[in-house]
Length: 573
Image 1: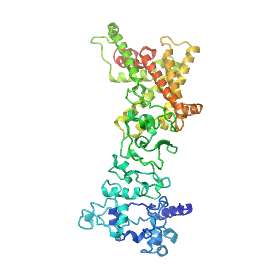
Image 2: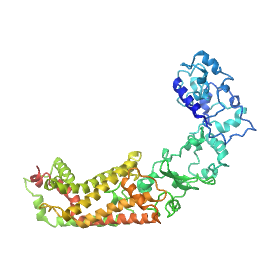
Image 3: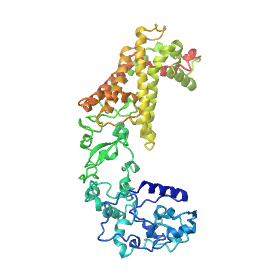
Image 4: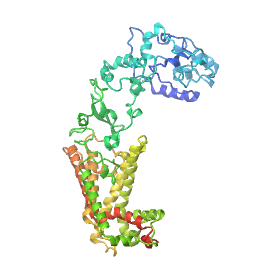
């Protein structure tokens, strides 16, 4: 590694000279740009004379160096002025030079493969655009670039091409260069089986199309491949919200085991050196892929069983999907809708009451849109009538009611965003349980509901008598609601306490509770069962809702909207 003082000196000198920046060495040369550069008449060995049949090439000991250390100014001096001469001139490239140390590293500013020709680029030539299509600027248009010399034949078989192309010539870069080391790895290097790549859907791509920085110094600076650069995310109903923190490779590639990346908090792959089939796509239909993580002994914080996606039943509390695939959602929704149908049938069987609510005659008129919206907002959402009757009860009711409004709106936006605008990253952040803001909002609103339920029970036991005309508390509904929220916090704490689980920065309640659960035997299995207990409690609440006193959460906004412009005018302020 380059000593730190020298590294700082180069950065400082580059800043002082106002030069374009440090040029990191690369192993692949763009043929078109080399063809129009100032060095186009040189052979590879004019500069790289140290590469011989005897000298190991590539030398695996050198691929992680910061930049080619042998390419200092003395090589450039074979054709160009020395730093001493340039320093005496007082300027270089239009910038002042006070000492030759500022010119000690030519390739720190100049890429020797792409230097402009003497006199600069022709006026009609744009070096920022591909050379193909601009041949006519200098000569008659050609279909192909001229070949390299016989002396350079071995070099160009690996180092010349366009890594972003899918042509056979560019694929040769991979076969001759990357596989030179990775097909016969040593020293812990990841192994690649060429047949694993050739037999998959990525057979027409080259290595550098995905590993875009792999042909640069240092070789280890490359990041994990981002599959989302070409592919879209799975819908949340397929991927589950928990998989927003899982890299694509953890499920789709074979030959390695999942592992938590502690810096990014993502679940990726731990690739052993002998994993020759690492690039082979994993079959997703046999369930074996899921068992990589979903087993009782996993170390990545997964449940022992594959849990269903949070479905339609969960939207009032969670960022969820529109699915009804699990055994809790489907029957609970069916019974809930049956309860609503029963209420509607009671209404329809009482024509006298309906006549009073909607009198016929020339003096009757329907509600205006403005009145309906105002009534729903003021009386349905802000609970204006309850506040006038009892501010204390309104505050307790608000601690329970308003968090559900926030959660429901949040969940609907996330659902719509991930389905209809999958490229909108905010939607995926809203549906990811461990996204800091999402985790904080849901922990805060859940805590508000717990506090509201406790205050409601305490007020009923020892508080003042309720005002006339207001209904009493519905203990079964309140208890089920409280159990649903509390079990949700316990479930979150279990998830964070699982071996290998990542962090959830915004989940302050779950983070405080998690240490109490760490070390419990078979926690991954207990977590799976607790998930279904939590879902069943909420399912019971939803089934009971049409028959409880809390059904006004659904019916009141409808009644207010219907009555706002007609019979309900006498209630307006």
